[in-house]
Image 1 (cartoon, one colour):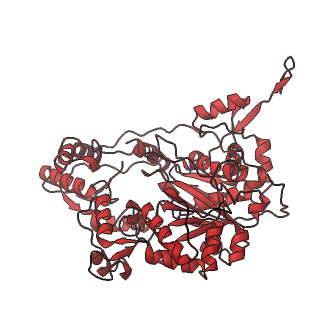
Image 2: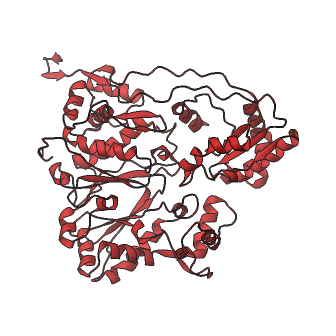
Image 3: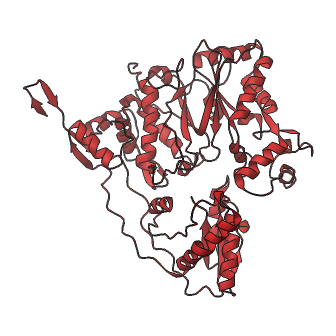
Length: 111
Length: 439
């Protein structure tokens, strides 16, 4: 406590605690990237907003034209990643992606 | 881009790559959208698939019990503002001594983890509940309520990870039990007005905890277009519901009358409905049902569309309104059934709203029903003028009796569906709990 007796006030001092809590997720390395897109299978994941269906359709056309051997798995194979059953949809992804032989995933749409 | 960057840290991938679509797809013609994808998005998608970005180093943070600032009241507040640890109002400096006072009102270990909150992925510890409770201006004896609130926040069904979404809905905590009177919560006139310490500070605590532990900061993880200020806690008038024989709101979650419990849901807005007049429930119903319908537009997609069966409209009834309905022989369940039957819109309007919102070109309730995705009540005929409900069943409505004892009003909240689905938690009091003085 320090006092300012001259004007009859006392200014308190406080040692304030950190109000957050430690993060539980440690930094993880990203997956290895593809050496080429030729012959690779790409899956689209969609949260059913922001016209992702059109965006993916256009991307598929563009990438498919540039890399004729590329194949794609439609977002409809996985379900809505932002709907009422999103937890189940996301939990099922690893097994589905493995079973389908997917090489990489593009997930959208954010805003 | 900003959201992806902020969210990815909590997921453990601070260097995750994104491919932007310039502008907002919702406001672009098909041609403009295609041009943007061709000229910008596609190249970035290709680059992201082929090139691994450099590892990002995440800064070191303080420890769970570290003192981060020492100084005067003003200096502490300046520090908390500068480090985005405050909501903009002055905070009570969270000192070890003050936190200790809060911890005396729980039997739980200070290190106990109540859940892990996205998007920051931080542990919701009893300790951090106390720290943020101090900051919000709560009294130490509110601690059992604060713990129950954070248990609700951590409940998967609530969906805290969606708290930064576009509509910027804000939560509402509804309180039941003897603790309402023991802690001095307002449950009568002006129940949603600030000015009552318990209601106000517990409401503020929720938003501070969302900010500091879940990690929802405006311009970062909180992407509310407009947003709302936090709502004060609404306590139910249990004197009245005892008198009319209606179950309390907490019964929705399995807690009988007399239980200390709270419920939390998230709402994008609401409206006060004045002068609900009539001597019988039948006379009162049309005005109330109309008020419900007018609160729901795009939110119906939580019934059918983006969500399925996750819409729970909430109505606050003033005591004399509830008493008049009960005097007409209606139970709360009967009122829910009547609202379900009357708060309806034409099928063609329902489908048009879904199309407008989702931009999916075709929405067909009949098709959804025949595919087994929605109940028959949405497709009782092929008449496009048939009236369809907003929700799947009468029980989806939630009704709370509170507010001014002498006014005939109701308040209808627009629910945010799966992005803040109502959950209820019991408020567990510590051994030796003695009702403290009322505020």
